[in-house]
Image (cartoon, rainbow, N blue to C red; front, side, top):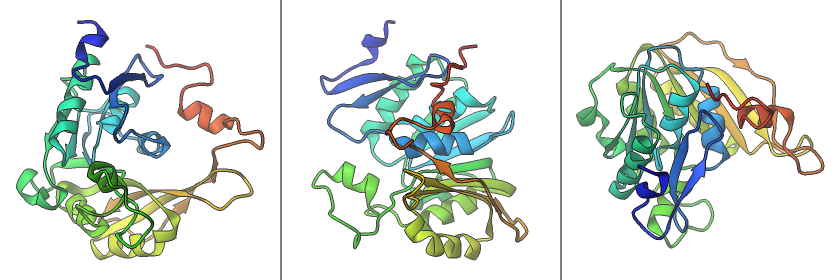
Length: 255
């Protein structure tokens, strides 16, 4: 089948992910993945043969990128909205990733019913960043649910990760720094010990607007703070670190 044959609706497009020929189907008028998902997949460092579950998976971007970046055993995305599950499934088939990547429809709050305990080596998540009291809520419910905690709280996400992860497994997430104290508290309450952290700055002289965390289920108390990640140079161009993460530095990983 040609790529265009995987499109089923007029409001869909295919985007090139710039790695190993992988593409993704997205809605032109719906939720689309952002830089946070790309940074999350890069930060994960998944070991060969590992089983991964991606919560709040949306378009399936993180599972698709994880399979492209790492020799995973299997990565499964969990997504609440059935139309996004179906669309992500078409992206997976288009990329011929069916042996390594799958999507499941379901609610994060139902993780105990949907997944066996201690069944994954890694859990990743790009969760809704805002509570209902933060900012304006988009009138489009799907877009609103991607940004605001309308369907699940961070505590719900952490509960799901704790249930799914084996002892010593990793929970890798991206979030907003203004909630960092709350996030670390919720993680430690569930024995998901933060072990690595990296702050992401839009410009070198601006405050950070993203934080990446790598937590270990049952890990000991000690956290490494990685060097800051700067997104833009002063002229608005991407920094070398971002170009490398996006595979725009001349290494397209086509093999």
